[in-house]
Length: 429
Length: 150
Image 1 (cartoon, helix red, strand yellow):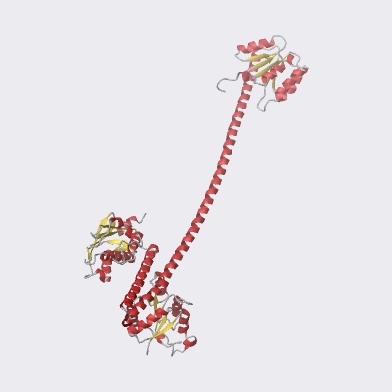
Image 2 (image 1 turned 180 degrees about the vertical axis):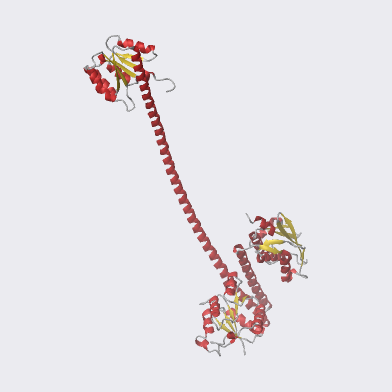
C-alpha cells in the first residue's frame, strides 16, 4: 500500500502478564523498527485489536478460561478476509497444558503459531514478520474488496440511471410516435377536407358554366329577337331598355367566363414546353381584328425568343396584355403597341409598350388583383379579371409580371419567363 | 328525301332559339326534339310512339346537349356508339361551356364535334347553317348507318 501505513494495522499487540517477557519483546520489536503495544490482559488486547492489528503475541500464562472467551469472540466476529496471525509463546515441556489446548480449539478460525520457550530473538522476529506480512496481505484484500464494492456500487448507480434514461428515452420515443401519428392523421383529415372543397368548387364552377349561362343566353337572345322582329311596335325607350338588358346579360356572361378562366388557371396542370414566341404572337395578332390596322398598330420587334411555357395559357396572357394595351387608349388616339424582348439572368423579358392613358404608380400592384379596376365601366368596359389571370398564369409557369407606367404617358407591361436552356440547367436539382 | 335532325335539348328557350335559327338559316331539314336523355333513347330505339318512323324518322345527325334530365347526354352518346344502327350517325355536342373534362369525355365516347351554344341569335343561325352544310351536304357516312334500320 502506498502512502502512510495506518499504525494500528502494522501494530503488534502483546500480552505477557508475568516476568519481563512483554517488555523484552517490545524492546526487540522496536529495535527491528516494528510498532508494538503491551496490553495488561487479553480483554484489553481484544478491545484494541478491534480498531486494527498486525499480529497478536501472547504468552501461555495469559490464557485463562475467561480471557480465552474474549479471544474466541474477537476471532469469531472477523470478516471473511480477516485471519489475525496469533503467535503463542508456550512454556517449554508443557505443550499439553489446558490453556494451550483451548487455544488450539480456536485454530479452525485463526492461524496460530506456537513457539517454544526459551526461544531465540531471531525466531521471534521472523515469526512476527511472517505474521505481519500475512496480515498486510489480508488488509490489501480488505481494501480490494472495499474498492470492488465501491465500483460495484457506482456501477449499479450507473446502471440505475442508465435504466432510467432508457425508460425516459422510450417514453419520449412513444410520445414522438404518438405525435407523428396525430400529425399524420391531421394531415390526412385536412387533405381529405381540401379535396372535398376542391371537388365542391369544381362542381360549383361546372354548374355556373352550364346552368347560369343558359338564362343569360335567353335574356340576350330574347331581347335581340324583340329588337329585330318587333321593332316597328316599340318606342325608342323600349328599344333602349332592351339593348341595356342584352348588354347586361352579355357583361354578366363575360364576367362568368373570366371567373371560370381564372379558377381554371389556378388549378389546371401546366406542363411547360419550349414555345416560339414569334409564331405565338403572330397567330394572336391575326386572330383579333382589334389588334390590326386600322383599329390599332401592333408592332413586333423580331426576333422574340423561345421560352418555356404552356402554350394555351401563354396565348391567353399575351392576348390579355395586348387587348389591354389597345383598349386603355384615349378615344381620339389610335392605339400603338410595341412588343419587344430583352434577356436578363437566364430568363426572358417581353415588353408590351402602349401609348395609352397610363397607370398611376400607386395602382401598379392593385391592377393585378382580381376584380380590381381603376377606371369606371363607362370609360372602359371590363371585368377586372384579365390581369389577375395574366399574373396567376405567368406565376404558375415560373415567371413574373410587372408594369412601368405613369399617368398619361402610356404603360410598359412586362412578363419574364424561363428559357429552355435555363430550365435544362436547373433540371438535376 | 328530306333529312332529319334530332335535337336533344331540355331547355324550351334553347329549343325555341334553334327552331328560329333553322328558319333564319333557311334550313329544309326536319327538326325533331327530345326533351331529355330518356326520350332521346326511346326515339332512337323506336320505342312506343317513336316506332312510327313516318312521323319520327331516323335522324341523320344528332345535336346533343350534355346536361339533361333522367339520362345524361354522355349516356345517350355511349349507347349510340354501341348500336350498329347508330354507330356512324354524326353526333354534335352542343353545350353551354368548353369544360376540358367534358370535351375530353365527349371525344373519347365518339362525339364528332363539340360546339358551345352562341349567345347571339345571328351567330347561332350562322353556326346552324355551317353545321348543316358540313354534316348533311359534304360529310359522308357508310351505308349501314344510312339504311333504315329499326
